[in-house]
Image 1: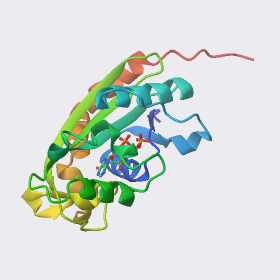
Image 2: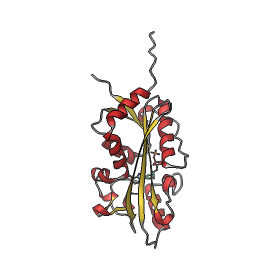
Image 3: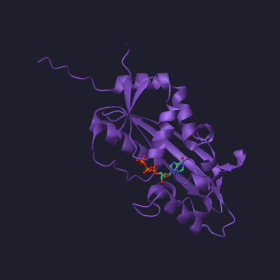
Image 4: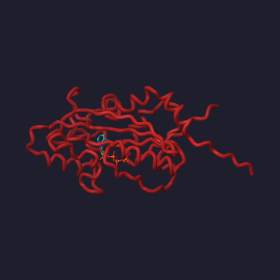
Amino acid sequence: MKKLTTLVIATSNKGKTLEIKDLLKGFPVDIKNLDDFGPIPPLKEDGNTFDENAYQKASFAARILGLPALADDSGLLVEALGGAPGIHSARYAGENATDEQRYLKLLDEIQGESNRSAAFECVVSIAVPTGPALTYEARCQGMITESPVGSNGFGYDPIFFYPPLNKTFAELTRKEKSRVSHRGKAFAELKDEFDKVLIWIRQNMPVQEVVHG
Ligand code: ITT
């Protein structure tokens, strides 16, 4: 039987993990979570761009685990807030805040604002332990609602209205969201060239030393 390439999903966000697993369903990779490896140090994430953060998370996990790793750095850019929370989306309401606390804070910040334009951005990085990485990125344009609507999805989904479907992301099924979302679009590019990605991973993985005892 052909051995599958292992790919570690380097995220501790449960909502993201569910979407990524669905997006990669049927592709010839053996998907592992960080939980499959017991405790590892927290992923470092102190870059100035989504790109830098996605690469930091993927390469850190790849180096520590000795396996190819995929990380996703994403966030919400609100026009009326000059692009905030952007790369600070996860920590917008403090370190241990809940998704609800984050989106309520955002609604509070833009209360009364007529410009509700916003975009989700997503950068996906696939890294190998030796350093090189592949990058995919995409955006999804929408509007911030006046109040939360819907209970699907995660993060800022209840306040992100997607005009083409006349619904918030939290009113869409996972499949519907992935068809149009920032993450769905970034993964569509990745999946389009998945054969090449697998070859790239195999060529860039360090050769394992076989020790005969
Ligand atoms: P990892 O770094 O462990 O992957 P994280 O939650 O810290 O998880 P990010 O640094 O990428 O992830 O922060 C993204 C923030 O934006 C976080 O608050 C998410 O909940 C939110 N977010 C990302 N993608 C989203 C989506 O598709 N829908 C709604 N909110 C999203």
